[in-house]
Length: 175
Image 1 (cartoon, rainbow, N blue to C red):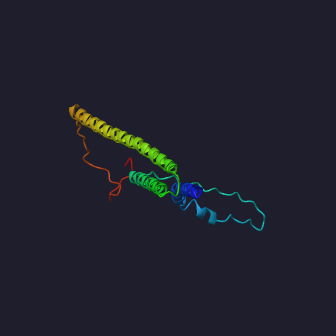
Image 2 (spheres, one colour):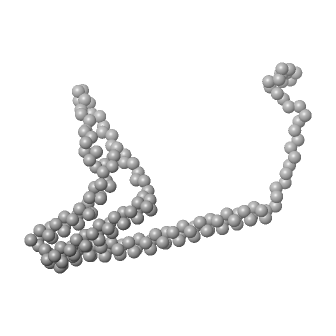
Image 3 (tube, rainbow, N blue to C red):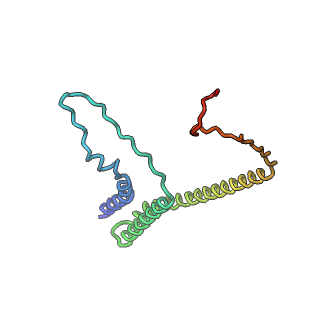
């Protein structure tokens, strides 16, 4: 009986890890849709045509909201797994030590979250400092431009008569 619960716990852990990966990978260019596309059949002339490989589209950058949602889902799933393992162990269906793997997974995940939060804070501080430095450079450039001597304005002299090629009384050069 306890080995069945252990196998169930292993399947549940893998389901929590693999199902989101499968769902995330199943896009237009990958996953099941790739399997549905058949290879081009050979022509009647037996001419060999080079197969053109599809160039994968570059991944779009992952936004902050996506990362936070992914972290929240993973934390919720691991917490539910810990609670399930505790409930199974408390009911006497399995020994107490089956709670150890989910607890270790959750503890490791929380440790990684702590590091990620520190990295996010450092990235935000660096961005704020970069914006402040850019503002300071722009202010310095503006002050330097204001302090510089003004340029000398040269008055351009325009001729009295302007040549108009579309005028009615056109003359050839040299006349």
